[in-house]
Length: 593
Ligand code: HEM
Image (cartoon, rainbow, N blue to C red; front, side, top):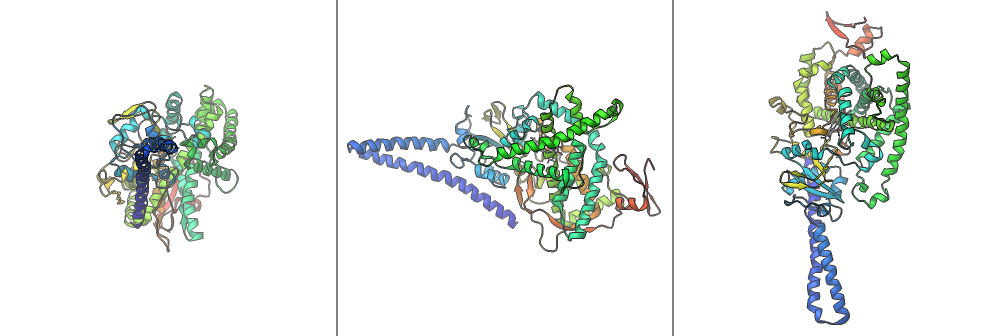
């Protein structure tokens, strides 16, 4: 609570700053006006002084008009916009010229914008400027739906970093049109199809069990568990496997190390507030060095991904045609198949593949870290989820993908965490108005950046009862769809550009959570507790990464028993092994056994 109040007081003081700056500027702009009046009184005094007062008067007029212009509702970028809306969209003026820049350089942008929408009575739609960029933001489910599902907002603004990283050729930033549609279709069929997602379940289970081992070993050797890195590497391997068909044992040496370095640099660059995106003059200088770093990164990424593509090409040329036809390859194979139809060149392919790594890795890892933090804080909820797993799975086997539909309480925990800590509180990637369009009663000009403040909606007491309470039970009482049809909770966005990886992301989070809860009781470290402070980078992360302890739950760990009873190598990646419990001893049956 103390933390909450600390946040809201800092947000409040920000709003006061914004308003005070506006009003003090009004005063500044008025005082020369007074001076000009007095100048007029003394206008009878001839010669030099009358010329001076005329100059002063003209200056005053210019200043007043500039300030009136700059201090229009919504700020500078809205004053410059055409066509003007007949009904003005309410919103803060912000600092002259800068607009709401400082809301975006802070790490709590979602909270600042939520407070401003409330203060300006602009929940459905608020206008503001950041430099020369015009924004609208909705903190209301209905208007949010109108924006997300409108074809007028099916483009995305491409930041300089995204452009330099060639992401305008990848799915997330590609302009709305045939190229983007083609990518969506291909990925829906080959990467995110239900068959493909469920077929990948065995690999997810394997990575989950490896995480269980890593958690045990961290607890054994260090007496605590720092989950962030464990989750991040697991998630990176998971996406790498489905996209590139490759995974890494160690991210501290060799190719694994290079990959991790490239991914973290990319995250940082995409998450940075880049002044060049909003101030054209600044963009000439690249004073933050974003452009240079992006260009350096692109050349390293090209080498890294190119190597993987070459490996795939070689493997394909070695394979017989029949083998190629029956193999259910990774996403690189799918794109290589389409290469012959001249749909993608190498640069496009690298952009598409690389973007998936960025989108798919941290969203999953960050969400799981928040869930585990909540489990440590709410021991009663954790025990309830563990009882559910024990009842459904029993004591003799590891939880599997196929158990998930029978674990509604676990699913409710995931939903509640998505509500309280949405990884993309501003839906991560904004939309862009392709042409002039209407939102409610307001005209929104082409080129306006549109955002949805999902965090504000999921914390609005008029939408959710007791929004600050962590209460998974609310989803047992009411089944709320979270895939984009109900904008009260749409952590994956909605409409044409809804997250295509939502099913895969959710399946991964639910399975790994079930595995981690089946094997361990998660508790607070001896000293200190869980700090729920937030930090918005590319996603909404825990400001202080979770450090906790685990207690083994005395369950049969399938992998260890496997080695004890079966010295024969069983390939767990190929087919699901089946289990038979026989007089208290686990017997593992495999098709090839
Ligand atoms: C918990 C996990 C995830 C969350 C919360 C999440 C959230 C989001 C959100 C909010 C958007 C913007 C949607 C909109 O504009 O309406 C998005 C877009 C996207 N996501 Fe996800 N995502 C997750 C997992 C994934 C995964 C696993 C992948 C792929 C491996 C992925 C790939 C993408 C792509 C490619 C887009 C851009 C789609 C487009 O513009 O057409 N996401 N995601």
